[in-house]
Amino acid sequence: MAAAVADDFAKKCELQHNDTLGRFVIARCSLSAGETVLQEQPIVILPHIGDRRCAKCFKLTESFCSQCRLLALCEDCAGHDERDCQRLRELQLSEEQVQLLQAKVNAEVQPALACLLLGEHEHSRPLYEEMSQMETHLEERRGTDIWRSHQTHAYAPLEATGVLMQLQAVDEVLLQRLLGILDVNVYEIRAPEYGGAMRGLYRRAALFAHSCLPNLETAIDDERRIKVFANRPIAAGETLYICYTSVLLGTEERRHILRTGKCFDCSCARCQDPTELGTHMSSFICNACACTGGYVVRQPETGTWQCLLNPEHKLKPEFVCNMLERAKEEIFHARGDIYRLELLLVKMSRLLHGNHYLMLDLKQNIASILRQILQNMAHCPNRKVYERKIRVCQELLLVLKVVAPGISRLKAIALYELANTQAELARKLYSEQEHSSRELLAELNQTEIMMREALRMLLLEPVATPEGQMSRSMLRELKELQNDIKLLQESSDDVVNQ
Ligand SMILES: C[S@@+](CC[C@H](N)C(=O)[O-])C[C@H]1O[C@@H](n2cnc3c(N)ncnc32)[C@H](O)[C@@H]1O
Image (tube, rainbow, N blue to C red; front, side):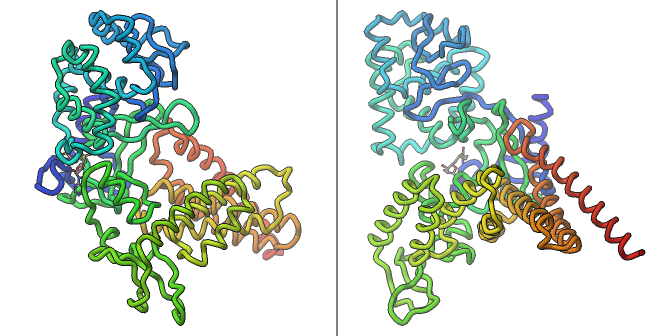
């Protein structure tokens, strides 16, 4: 299996280097949409900065291994990697030193130890060497907040206790390099608890460059194996891109994440276009007097916020910043309350374009509450609830079709939600005798097309992921839908033949 996995990458990908991207990957041959280019297990799995997770099962924990006393181990796990445990026992630390390393404030000691231990054993030494080649942006990061945090919460306690001297005689720069490699290269992976996240470092998946319009999609399964696949047909020689951020963020937010976390400025077509490919995902409504239908966008070269219709209509950057901060806070407080969310949507629509990323965030929140309402028949949802959900899904899809034009998990889920709600509403209206069987048939035929499109994308997700599971139950729903369509067709044929 491992050899076949490595071969996929070797057969289909070629490593290159240039001054802008550093190392990056191009397609060695043409790739079809959905084709896998890589599957691999992580070199190392790490908690998010500040979290402490069991070295064996990765559950959040405050307990430590009773043997080595340095790696976190939850009460349900009997032990962790014996070689690591043995190596840490050899350090022969005093109780006081152990306490310093275990202190909650020094939680960054754990990821540092996990990396250092890779270099301590013969079997993992090649992985450590390979990891050391990864991009670290040491100079750009020097003196930043994250540098100081690593210095205070990882380097200082490891140095003061003599652990660094004993483990490969690592100095501060080398430790900062290793922790920088994690910051720049890790993927977010699902943690054992619902909604939790942690970090995984992958040898080859860390080589792909970023674009806000990527041609690759990634999926990480419950065993933390990453699968990377083409989201559209790719020609031989094309650079392969993944998206390091979320496509549902606005340009300034994406660029901020890339600049502070990954130390580069993205120059993709979406970042260069003030309208974000016509979606207006960061646009304000121009409320200057006598301006109707104008949108205020940020000009990438000057950073000024100007109306597209009347460039003399401007917004001050501080106003934009404050307004967005306030809106984020209000959204945060309205979460889970559909009435507050809907009111906020109306209020914000006076200032923001309907596709603004904060408006989309609100719509996603609303869609998720509507899903819960519709799933619970005790709520007896009326027609308006279905129609609202359909509308919200359609609005999200219109944007996703532009910013995620190829195979996309987000788009597939939105399409499925739309198809499913539309089918439910059609059945309800038919059962209430508001629609004829002909109207029901037309609706179900339409939803079948959408369902098949959503499934085409979701069936590429590994089985051991929530989306992979979802696609299996969607297959059953599709069969039922097709059965209903067949029965309706037969009965309408009977009527015609009589
Ligand atoms: C995960 S690493 C990718 C592999 C890396 N280029 C290497 O040589 O190991 C991320 C780093 O690659 C570079 N990079 C990736 N995409 C880029 C882009 N679109 N523009 C500029 N630099 C990019 C940045 O230096 C970024 O911090």
